[in-house]
Image 1 (cartoon, rainbow, N blue to C red):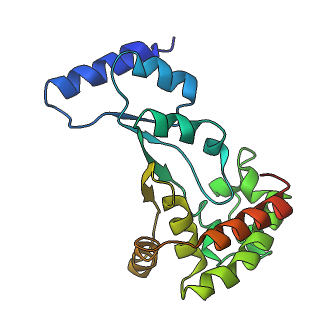
Image 2 (image 1 turned 90 degrees about the vertical axis):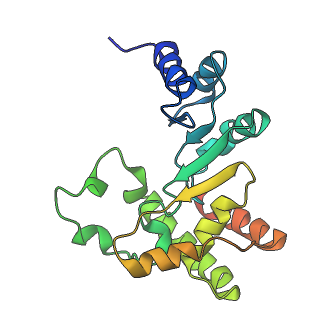
Length: 192
């Protein structure tokens, strides 16, 4: 008995009109749901997962949001820590049996993607170092390169991780390095 998105979005719109919230947005919506909401009231932000290795939103969502002036607040730009450069091949063995990353629904922590990700991180490390940055800072800057992406939500467990995450903003990756990153992604993951 799911509530139709039109009902939920209509209520969000009423909250905004009443001044109870400033902006309204959605999380994990595809273009079909975004279009259904847009018929009722403008969607102001979308929160999807987006990272160097999880590029699903590039197929249609990024373009739709750009065309409809919907800001993207990307979550998981470090892909649950995989793009920090701190994981090794034996990392999976160290996880507790009940760790969420062992879930069957998490392909990034299963082979072949886990091994591909480690190879990718090793390959982009040199690009990051060329800027005097960490792999994590490069990964965040890569997500923020799109004008439609207004923010990136990167988790941190320690204060020093927050400082490193902040280093992902305020600088640009060169066009040639973006091309190199895309080439490495295509070569290692077999995707574009």
